[in-house]
Amino acid sequence: MPVHFKPRWALPERTATPEGVFRNRRAFLKTAGIAAGAIAAGPAHANIFDRLLGGDNVPTPDVENDPSAGLYPAPRNEAYQVMRPISDENLVTTYNNFYEFGSHKRIFKAAQKLQIRPWTVTIDGMVEKEQTLDIDTLLRKMSLEERVYRHRCVEAWSMVVPWTGFPMADLVALAKPLSGAKYIRTETFMEPDIASGQRQSWYPWPYVEGLTMEEATNPLAFLVTGAYGAPIEEQNGAPLRMALPWKYGFKSAKSLVRFTFTDERPSSFWMDIAGAEYGFWANVNPEVAHARWSQATEQPLGSDERIPTLLYNGYADEVAGLYADKEGERLYY
Image 1 (cartoon, rainbow, N blue to C red):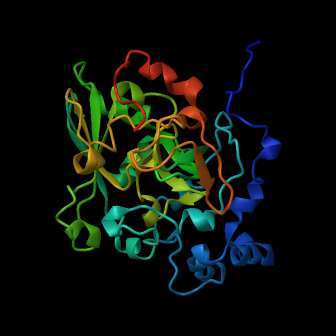
Image 2: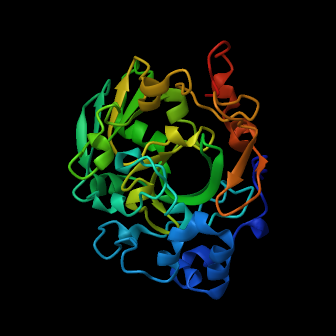
Image 3: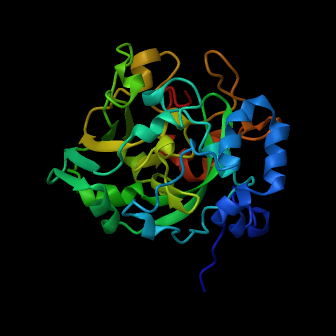
């Protein structure tokens, strides 16, 4: 009979946050224990009190009007375990980078202006046939699953999130790329009328990222449509974002509208802004410092402690082979 070996970074089921804790998250967030934890966290997490107490001005998933709501929760793929407890959903949904809505971390209210229906996704470039699909049509073509992934921001904070979505390899298969395609260029929405950050002309909007075909078809590359057993919220990249857990978080672009298959390496948003600090590969490596800070440790959301950062964010066994022939390139920032 087949013998299945868990990845080196996997942890026994008993060490993960219990299923009911984040499935029944609304009841969980109202408990006294979580409120006490928020108080202990101090001013840094002051904005979470609205969510804990059910404030009227705090966004929540609009599951009643989301056509995809019935797809959640999706079955969890147990091949993807965690090395740490799952992060508090409240922190994950209120502490966000989303420069389209501002350069600070508390953009979750402003991000509610993003209208995620109707939403279309274009697949073009070096493919057999270019196509544009409504997001719900795309979802019906895919089999959704839940994966628990580590996420490491280049700013040295981290989290562990139960994402729902589908392998990026499935989108590549749908696209039917031509044999000469070497890269996928991804592009996010462009709506300066509702996204105040996009009115700032010194940024090269829209947000662009890129991957090699080998990276995009690696089993870890994931296209996210949900989190914590529900459709993903706007501030976290609704209705479609990437999750590339071995790379720094800025590579996991949010609110995607276009996938372009090309034979030219894309220049990304942060490469265009600060190429000396942000490169194409941006793989996590604790031994390679950012130009302005160390990457040796990270601070999990909701914690005052710093923990050691792992090579490729703990996924080296799964992805290191992608870069075996890339000697001399800037692989880690």
